[in-house]
Image (cartoon, rainbow, N blue to C red; front, side, top):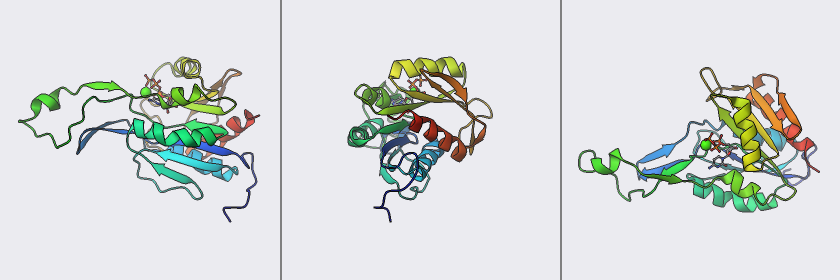
Length: 223
Ligand code: CTP
Ligand code: CA
């Protein structure tokens, strides 16, 4: 029964997870997005639920089923994702920001479909503006919550990830290499964990194994 407390390192804990890409409209049929299958975030949601947590998964558009037991909130844009995260973040003990949020969005999405030719001026130069940084915004008021970020990098993986740990105010960053042969869309992941305590490489494995290891590392940081 879902109401009974479940055993595990996150029993009695509330967990927020963001997953998938965001999609930022250009017009009703076109959008700007990031490459993300959502598999890592959904694997984290399963792992956190299996570890006993009450899990809210705020998900951008992905072709994945809701994991058993997990509350899924579906959103499209970064601004919607931030709004959907506010209350679950307030109520959580631990948050994983796994979403591949579009850094920029079209400044003035058109309300109607833009047409080739007639609307070429609008289609050929799309002005972009900054999206909110969901992790940095929420981590600024994190209090005793444990905040985990992700860094998908093609170059200087560890240096870039350590800069993000400091810049964003996260407690832990899970960094992975996404160059040729890297993680996108695949079921495997090579991940390095970085915190103020140091850097450690997780054993290469399936996204489910990696998710379980990240959940254990984050649970160890809870007071
Ligand atoms: N993130 C977020 N909101 C954003 C951008 C990123 O919450 N608008 C989170 C991601 O979910 C991830 C972490 O921040 O946990 C790092 O995201 P990443 O795109 O690697 O970092 P950026 O700071 O956007 O830097 P860049 O894309 O230039 O590498
Ligand atoms: Ca980014």
